Length: 255
Ligand code: COA
Image 1 (cartoon, rainbow, N blue to C red):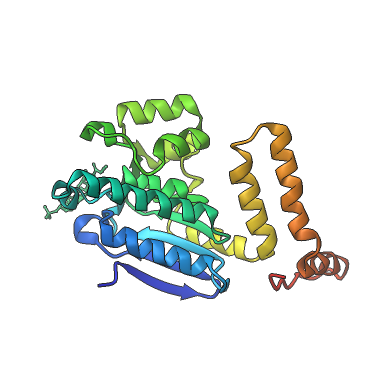
Image 2 (tube, protein in one colour):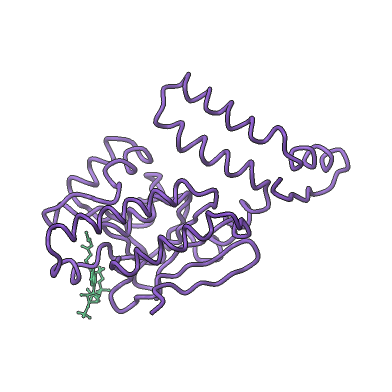
């Protein structure tokens, strides 16, 4: 059974976790299918430039790991599930595709971690986010302890992770955990604003930011230079200059 509803709108795909009855929890099947979709849009066919990721229904974006499935897993199965989860989340970051999470409802544990590995987050006014794992005797296992402090800083991340507190939409935006409040239209508009731009430039900028954050400033600036190089030889760079001179919108081709 398909775990996602997929809807293509031009260069943007909407992926909806189709598990409303279990609040879109991350079962093994959901993660396996997510990994396949991420590979599909990150491969040779670059027709999908941005993905808006959300959950079915209006209650949950994703309630984290599927705790019912987890209850029946032996320890090695838990480890292999986490390995696949980490690999899949990392593939989202490494993809040239831009991922916008529309956090349409609660996002707890792995649900927040899924949103964290996306490039941009729009949160519905009624939604909540939180890394609630310590309340279950575990720690975030899908990158939350590493991605949250990189996004919102160490102090705020420690407060949220060590207390397991849930935050409302307004606080999520104030902390920088979400970019803005809004509905699906806002999330789609953000994706549209990205795919208007030159594909190679967008991919290079995404990776310059993500990879550079792990480096000291000199190494990060050298990385920026290498990423800039990727754009210098492109037709799109020349098209950008020509369109500016001709006072028209550029038409980018991804070369
Ligand atoms: N895994 C598996 N099933 C889940 C789930 C999860 N993470 N979260 C919710 N569900 C299931 C519930 O068991 C329930 O199933 P049932 O109808 O068979 O009893 C169904 O989804 C609806 O859940 P319910 O709690 O009744 O809905 P709600 O809208 O009032 O609350 C949540 C939704 C997500 C706030 C609440 O279910 C919750 O706190 N879930 C646990 C989230 C969590 O701790 N995640 C971190 C994992 S590390």
